[in-house]
Image (tube, rainbow over all chains, first blue to last red; front, side, top):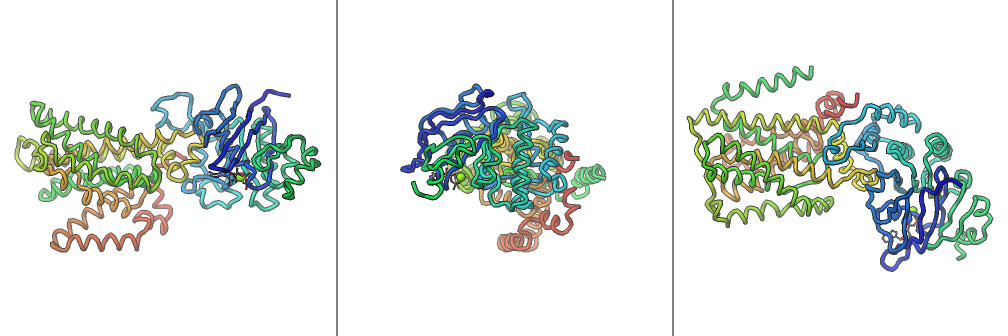
Length: 249
Length: 322
Ligand SMILES: Nc1ncnc2c1ncn2[C@@H]1O[C@H](COP(=O)(O)OP(=O)(O)OP(=O)(O)O)[C@@H](O)[C@H]1O
Ligand SMILES: [Mg+2]
């Protein structure tokens, strides 16, 4: 097995009385596509938010590459190349697709206040046009984000993550609310990005058909606990998983 | 074509005070209004943070400059020059301190938080003997005839407006402008992409403060008398006008605030001349009419009807994209 890119150890998080995550551990190796499934409210989005620093975990640790990121803040973690997309799909609706991509480009290495005013590097234009074409949005590039359809917004959000040079991308339900034809296209783009750009993916998904085909390994959560992990085949045949989805536990 | 347009505008601005010598003060005020609108739009339009407190920086600049002029013991022009620099610097320093506390607030909470700034500053200034307390301050007299004084300040304010406009045009065409727009559209998403939003917000706020402080320093001299509540921290006039002008012209655009400032200033002067006694009522009606007829501002309305023309006018961004 290749090197571990993300390692979550004993992540625990509660909101008031609700324990959203209880002692969850998982690993993602570089180059993998890993699935994260579980019934509604099982704590999947909460785990993503903890990983990217949106809220601190109550207990546990999170390591990305060789760096402990448990207590870093969102933009710091993003700059290491760990990004998430949002379940509700979030792009900049008042800005054109090109501008959405431009602002996603990582800043040059130079730090300090001057970097706030840095101009766009020329290579960035070629790259963003290539990536917009990659998700089939090149023709729409001067439309504003708000003018895109929901599916196109999902594709733009994905392209933005690629633009920001993600090493690990956490996708929160990339195919939710999308028509079946576009689902196939999105799955194809995810797999191609993984193959060609080497982006590691951790994917939350309710569509079992999609995740069983996409992921190499799957973790299943229920009621904030880790219920099972294994290959798609193992997960599909696991009686506990079946029970959780049928609401028996 | 574009160069020609800018050339003509600058040409008109240079000859205007000579062609209409009796309107020099009003013309100076026009540039003040343009600066007020452009600086308000940095946060209010481009970044989506509505501030009711920008007048704080105007007042601080006014007092800072007047104190330097009074106490430095230099000749008029040197002390004015240093005074204006100190005004800008102090406004920025204050913006850093206040921004630290306020810029963590989002949306309406930020707006409400800024509401008290001007009022509090007015109260403090009104009770502080060092700067004249309630009876205010009078900046030193200009060493020369009245009309050369008016010309002098006209060109000072014109220069500040031009520098501000050029700076914003450059910034809005690059990463800075896009980062502000991203914060306006979705601040959490911006952070998730690795943008240090706090730094951009602070930089934007300080930029506005710098130009407002400098302008305040000059404006105190133009008006010739600094009253704590009616001139320096004039929330109910300057503070409100800033917002009205931007909304009139079109939020979040480069030319909208300029357009709004011109339209607002001219109508206001006309009301003052022809509807004296009713000018405030007329102004109120005008504001309502604008809100109803042009909810997106003049530039927004133009853009809806002639999308192409408006884009060349409204956004410096389109330049940098080609
Ligand atoms: N910010 C919050 N404040 C309070 N409770 C929260 C918060 N976020 C999540 N929860 C609770 O934590 C639990 C897990 O929510 P979470 O969004 O992580 O589930 P999920 O697995 O992503 O569900 P879904 O599949 O419906 O998206 C739920 O009971 C939810 O109500
Ligand atoms: Mg969720």
